[in-house]
Length: 254
Image 1 (cartoon, rainbow, N blue to C red):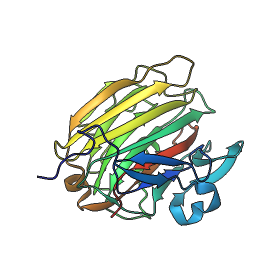
Image 2 (cartoon, helix red, strand yellow; image 1 turned 60 degrees about the vertical axis):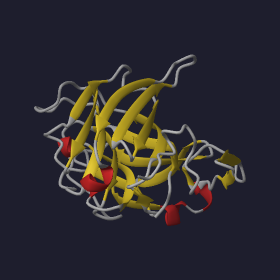
Image 3 (cartoon, rainbow, N blue to C red; image 1 turned 120 degrees about the horizontal axis):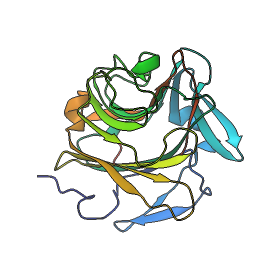
Image 4 (tube, one colour; image 1 turned 135 degrees about the horizontal axis):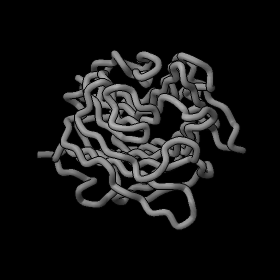
């Protein structure tokens, strides 16, 4: 059986993809004896990201690039995928910051996905969160609007098969997902088929909290060993601007 580098506490040695990260070009991180260089997206994000629907990249946070998935208009859907495929049969970790804002109460939220449909994948608007219909996928929702199947307007969920009406697991968020930026970290242990999702407020002194701890086989859910990872978001009759920034991926690329 393949050993889990995450379980050993080490970083994945194969590659480090730094997307929209607030780091200096040329910075390096030692991992399992290898020096891995950050590759900021500012110099070439068009080659590193596949943007669909209303998604675009802007520079509204100073020098940092921001993926703007929706811009605050009605019935929008956007997706952004890393153009480099990730080996979903191996362990990986990703972290990012999200800012869901402009609109009250704000809708509908964002999702992080591992999927096998391809870099042009885009799902339905509104409660579809931009991934409804992407059947070859595993989604982690950060949902800010309570549709009929949802437990609240401030929850996380794991969803299989591109159907946001059916949750494999849910958790009430310990921090507000709407209005203020927050950080999320997704950690996948391939050997144990274990997915953990952590969130943290960006206020001074805030600590990270584990909210989801779910058994799921990402490769099986995505229908492929080599898939794409990224984000979707949507608005409906209620709207919001939904941004992702400082996204880093620590994973073996396919």
